[in-house]
Figure 1 (tube, one colour):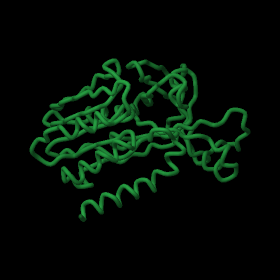
Figure 2 (cartoon, rainbow, N blue to C red):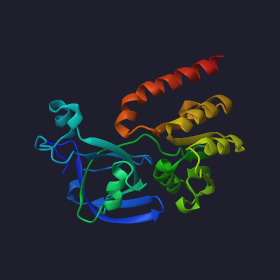
Figure 3 (cartoon, rainbow, N blue to C red):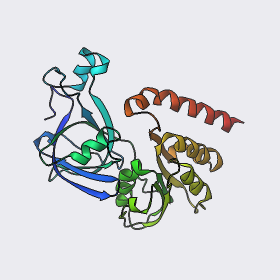
Figure 4 (cartoon, helix red, strand yellow):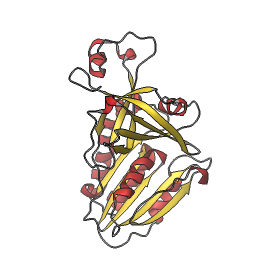
Length: 278
């Protein structure tokens, strides 16, 4: 259980479900989530903690203590996942995982997860919720952004308007997105192509409605960079109306991406400022 001696929550798998061809839902609960709480954001995330097998970690276990006392190569690995749903009454946390066979760390864990399995988590963090005063909402992402997009759509009132563009491999990877809002959903299929180019093309082709937009754009860092430039410079959207970030980057794992993400963002912002100034 998360307490003064630890920096994590300990969840126990309650059930799992394959909700699309490449996505597995894992619901965790238990007394170890007694201190878990969200604050109304729709992009809340947790960092799943994966200690290395066979390593004698300091007890009581703490990621912070491990990092302070152990060689870097033995630090527990972290993987970031969006909170799809949190039910404080039943104390159940729902997480959706993109799964591609044995690729990665958290995906294979989710595919093998069974009731009774334990998982450690840090968080939650987060920073976005749809602005109720926005003229309309734009949601753009790949599979990694689907949980946050789905949670955001569910939070919209009936008088809201949303345009949703999501890139997946194929129609078999679509999910049913529930909302009371007037939502215009476009699924973009990449097929055997790389992540992003078709999604960027679809956003560029979108005819924006009247009114001030509140936009949420997340996913693979390469297409996020292209769309950030498009939305900021060509569409003139202010940063205060835009939640945008590279959740992941092709060719690197989560640890490697976290190490360079701050500098990568700085370079993107510098290039953007120079383009705006010119």
